[in-house]
Amino acid sequence: MKIAFTTCVKLGESCIKKILEMGGNLDLLITLKDEKARNKSGRIYLDNIAEENHIPLFKINNINDPEVEEVIKEKEIDWLFIIGWSQIAKSRVLNAPKKGCLGMHPTLLPKGRGRASVPWAILKGLDRTGVTMFRLDEGVDTGDIIGQIEIPIHDRMTATELYEEVNRTHIRLIETYWEDIVNNHITLRKQNEELATIWEGRKPEDGKITGDMTMREADRLVRAVTHPYPGAFYYKEGKKITVWSAEISEYPEENSFRLKDGYLNLLEYEMESYEKDEDSVSG
Image (tube, rainbow, N blue to C red; front, top):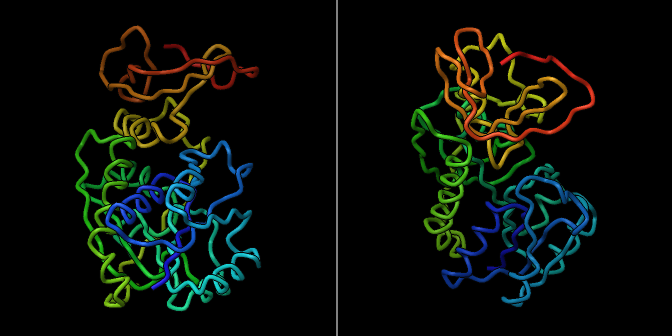
């Protein structure tokens, strides 16, 4: 069985390392060209792994470029993993491997299809999420499921903590299903479309804290978009304050932001000059 792996982020790198640690073989690694997405949160490079393990490394601009299909067929790849990759693979790439493409999504599909899975799980106040391994099709996170592992979410969990749990769960899914994949013993089950939900993408500007937020809303926002995401923020007196951690209270402290029903007291934050004094507030 010939298997290739496409990734440019930590989640995929962790899976690759686990496969190699278990004695598994990878016949091709695919990643972004070095100059692409240099500022992308969590961007990683596969050069060292490829060199140390004598695995061919193919660098691309887009997963749907014709040369991707060509190299998959040239290497006679059976399964192609595509993990942590923002570009949606089209049918020509999906059909290029002999058996198809495999992915993972950090929700319990069919719930939470789409983007920003870690921030949304916190923003929505969920008590659990998970990671799903599935066979990719032309839809967005709609393919047949191979397996799922649940992740509990505690009341004070941050995106940093949840991302690490998601990373560990990716590794556990690789451990659980690798032998089934290479021995062609996987069982697929259809997703229940009646339970499907879609989570929209988020932009850095969606992390803005405003005075009409409640303490609960502001607290969730800070926890949801802290590292490795861009962070929650507000403007004050020509400065942009990015908040990485905070506590909520009915009473202000030295560095506070006034909310609808209380205060956001800053614990860890960064301050930088901002040309336009936008939505200035008093502490």
